[in-house]
Image 1 (cartoon, one colour):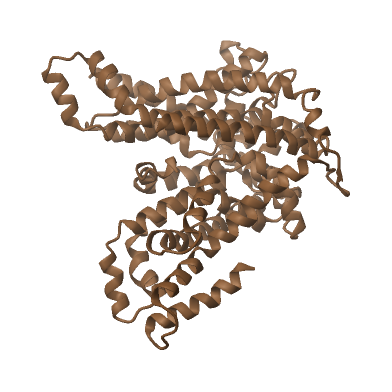
Image 2: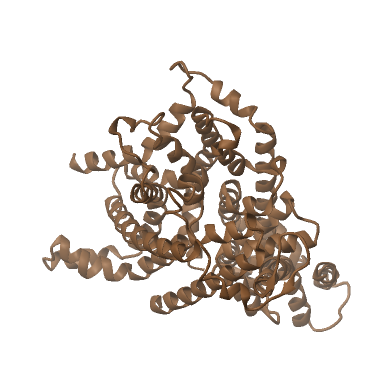
Length: 260
Length: 301
């Protein structure tokens, strides 16, 4: 019984802020329950559909880009020998060594040079780059775990390496792909610092930057109910996705990919 | 540029695989195919990682306004770092924050991991409950606390504590926020380490009459060392680069008492429009962190 009571008390402590946020997002000014805060939030600034759409667009491009690039790269690192292979692999992992915040200023300048200033695509490309060390390591290990005989049989049957990859290997590494995609989604959906630096037009802000701007006094008195509605709109997709894909999330930890 | 070139390379490789033509040695073709698959990775690493890495150094040697042409002024950007009105204080504050967070976070994460280590009915619920804050974005978590620790609307107003009113309370409240958000994440890292310790080791120790404390200090901790080291690296680098919590939750206040190093970079770049100065601080921070990471990896292995 003591086993459960201490752990339950801790669980309440950890869950309480989330429950409070959900509760207060549903509380009206008069003390009753209402969706008014969400309606208010939908009209904030450029409107919720805009910010939600921006976030979704960036996340979709980031997830797709990360999955495609790391699947191809992981395949190359696991199954092929070519000049510069180890150097490229090390350079990819080195992204982990370089703190995020320190290269965003030059990235801001660099994206400006190629016309991707204030661009959601540019932001997504930066996210793909930051995801690459984890994703590439994860996918390389996933491909290495697949028996070589599987694709060799296909090659003998006349499949090229690309057809072997698409037809045989990709289905075999599906769990790795889901893990990589999940981490890419959580990172791009939630990141605040990169869009803050790389975007300068309010209409291209993703959710975190837009909701944080609710706390800036320039918008008048802070509407705390609306603020928690914003927190919920950001948090609920992540919480649901995590609960459904928990197994894949934990795989990311087990794989040792965090170690880089 | 590498894109289209490797594209054609790839087509040739695939064709040769089907045996329509038989040019060159199969080894060379396979190497070319491998390079084609690695090409997107190479393009991204080159343009979005190595290029900005070079550019940040170049920028740090120039007077680089937000708008307008840069002019060479080395080493002025580095020389003026010490005179920055906020940076020296930010260094001290960030180091203090990092030290406190690393100690408390490790202790809490280890405690939680030990609590949910054994497989029992319901343990999955506890693991999920402890981790769940980690699924929420850090910006969202900071905003959540921004409301929850506001005494007009939050549930703790009755205590009459000014959560962000004094420098010490602002730091304390931020620490609670960070512990809440990251304890489960670090617990999960330690849990993978704990589960890789063979059960037989524990059984052998118990049958030799070792006490719980002895098992913990003589077996669990030494065998957990690599995992603990990984957690420390992630926690230290993460804390040295702290931004969101202080930008969103305390907004650097009160009286600039919670301004972190990265916040100074941000302010120099986008409030003072001095990208060169921001780049110089970035380079210093970069060098320190790479050195620190290398040192820690050496200790770890």
